[in-house]
Image 1 (cartoon, one colour):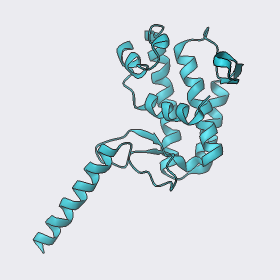
Image 2 (cartoon, helix red, strand yellow; image 1 turned 45 degrees about the horizontal axis):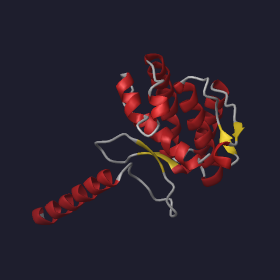
Image 3 (cartoon, rainbow, N blue to C red; image 1 turned 135 degrees about the vertical axis):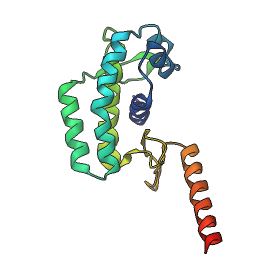
Length: 174
């Protein structure tokens, strides 16, 4: 199990448009075996989970470590995780749920276990919401210097260009 990938997947899940099954299928593009099982009910459950998960990332942005931990603990109590050892591909590793569970249950379990692992290994401050004024996407900061402030290079570039233009305008007006 790649916990960082699951944590980053939880940010992607939070950012996904799950109003229709097509949005969930798009989120699951790299996992066709889950795409074909996605239902309207999964979308409904995952939209609820998105509302529960956003405060965790906001607390990370606010550098409120105690809230990140408390909120994650509450979510793990509300959505119990059942890890299992798998031996497919001749490699022992953890899976968080069996194939008999719904797509929503699997994604929630992966998200929570991934986030809990990242928070324990790297710290609660690694979760955040994009600082761009035009974006509210969540992200997981796995950078070595712990300095990520934007969800993507696109938002970072946009913010840098806007700051540059504002400085030039201020100099021109002075």
